[in-house]
Length: 225
Image (cartoon, rainbow, N blue to C red):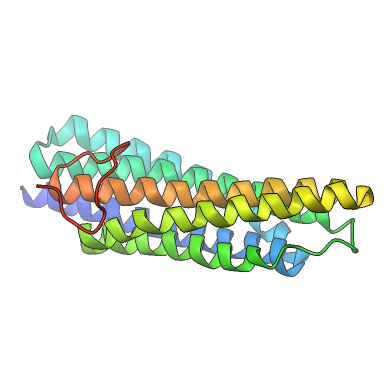
């Protein structure tokens, strides 16, 4: 790798980590607004989205310029391709955080509604997945990335249990249906954030090992043969 290419790739990764930090803060604030009725935080999430959007577009443009200028191959090509894909996943997470914040604002109009207890546990696990996926990217740690893939099943389980609870509440208390539907939507958005963290973990495995693991039912405790 030339010094110029190394410098440019390092710059891409630093910008990606800046975007990741902004997105993680948006997710933290949005989920706190939903689970703890911190509706003041919802506005901060919504106002942050434009910055993430513009940063995502700028980083994508830089990646495309590097592909044209340096014409990288092998691991260098994989690194730039991975930055492009992770960048897109982070932008989608930011959009989901905005949607969660909007659901939190809507629930604020229903003070009698209580969010399900399991929601806090689901949020903790999903945010751990996001941070863990980005840590595995920084550290080029495929084993850590596989652990993120394994965590997604528990998030899916929480998602199913919370939705079942909300459906039962709606059947028993018709006056809480609007708030329960907003919560239902927020929970699904959290589940989607975890899915994007899974995407990033899969991309890390591709970056480190050259192995595409999407849609495969691997033994997540083992490395591919």
